[in-house]
Length: 416
Image 1 (cartoon, one colour):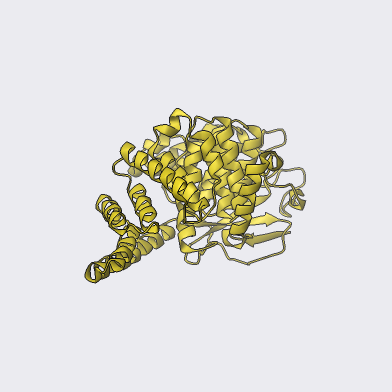
Image 2 (cartoon, rainbow, N blue to C red):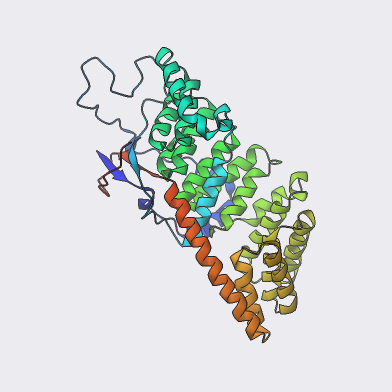
């Protein structure tokens, strides 16, 4: 049967699982081959056809017999949209913010389409034009895709996702499948997005962005081990491509554990040595592996990586911040304060340098400065939380139905 569920009802994978998996990956990576892909299960059974379908005719919204399709039928149905007032999410608010950041980064992998450059005031006219064209050529996947782009810009995500789906059914190209999955992902439907990206990965096994997006969909559901496996698989496609590793680094900020050995494999490539974020994320991986208490050789390596990152990008605020954390852990508070000040000066709106500065000032007896930085931290944290909340409300959440599941939450979607 079908059940209304949202992205918040999926099982969580504990942090300990990620640690265990990372160790297994280091010792025997071959044991994890294929773990990026979802395991086929009972949900693959086809749902009953709608009762209002006339005999001999395809159900509404389904291609005629013989038309090319994504596959027989998706195992989900986007039933409507709702607001994100009670979005919630797995883990802490920091994890949720990191998940939202990862989603935005994954969406940025979309290739720009002609409609992306259309001015907002022209979208309504463009919608009418596209619909008129589709009346004469309903099987044109490119027209459906263009209409999907336009509907998303007009604030009609439900219609947009249906048009992306139709485009992918008519022409299951890598770009059409990716854009369909991306639309699902951005509107907080990671499990349907995962199904699309998984199919896209099977059809286009050399598409790095499909694997990356699949990893982000796994991570959005709390399945950190599978998210890591997808990104490692993506990095294996082209070891010189920094993109998968940069996503791995961002996942570290979501309290995921990244195996430093995987970074070490890539560290000798030219794309690594000249990439400031790559050096920074490798340093963070080493720091987390050391459980925030590195021995002298590891600390020296971390400092070298962070210094290289800052040399490559003097405006890399997070590198100064991590350098301050390293110095502070070693008890060198004057150097820690200098690094935190640099991070603060580069990005005054970044909250953590103020918090770290407050703690460092307190430790050296600078009480007034500590109180000032702590107050700034509180003000910035409140401001960022309010901004994030406003942004969440601007993105409507898909309400979708999954096949063969017991009803978990009966929601009344706002149909468009």
